[in-house]
Length: 116
Length: 110
Image 1: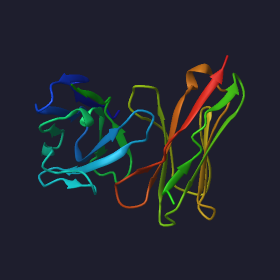
Image 2: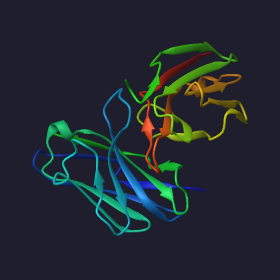
Image 3: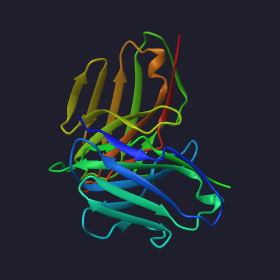
């Protein structure tokens, strides 16, 4: 199997606070993890690519100082939304590539963030 | 031009019919193609991957790839109401990253 978990599944926070989302590959090692954001009725938009032990690569238009990514081990990547604002409210989904694979991504269940 | 295009639908088919979902892509160098299913409020779930021209079958699902026409499709036979979801086409234009289409919303009517 290829199971990816995310925590928390749902978070509500006040504007200006920071929120950390964890993404874990439970039964495989993932050298690369991806972070996506999805707004209602829209497709997934890649935010950044996270490689174990190195700095994340951010997509154009994504603020790296606002969306902090840490990929500290082969099974864990975290996304921290700093000083969250209502426009950051979205569905955040991570995916992971199995070590040795170059293309098949396995998705976590997603985290729904609501910023009041 | 979008890199991966899908008809947004909604596509409605009666239960037991064949649902046909289509996708075109712009990058001729793409080597890997995927279909994901996404239920409302949930994350995408991998259904099929295809790498070579032709058909690939897995149960009620058949993926078809035509690289010359830059076209990939998904057929769902004997459609069930539980197949009602948004189907995302994803293409790998470069190593490891995926580009997603906007998705086709499928409704299977009982």
